[in-house]
Length: 92
Image 1 (cartoon, rainbow, N blue to C red):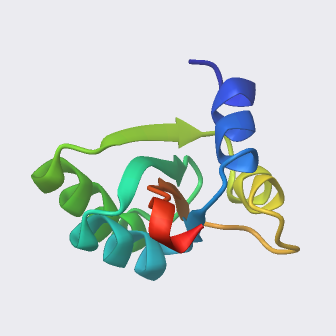
Image 2 (spheres, rainbow, N blue to C red):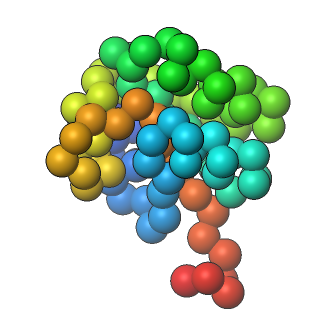
């Protein structure tokens, strides 16, 4: 998967978590399907996200920048991490 495909996946997700803390929480809850990490993010910030994803067997995709990831998530600032979330039928 190239960078533009990865960003298109997060952009088109019906539900997502944005930011390292929210993404880690989503992974821990078992709600994350796929995780995206910005290549230029501080390794100390994304380490818990990567660790949680590895423990749960969730795929991690690196994207080019925090700016690009933030824009793909529809926010005006950069994002270190984001996740596509499971959408359950009773919460849609």
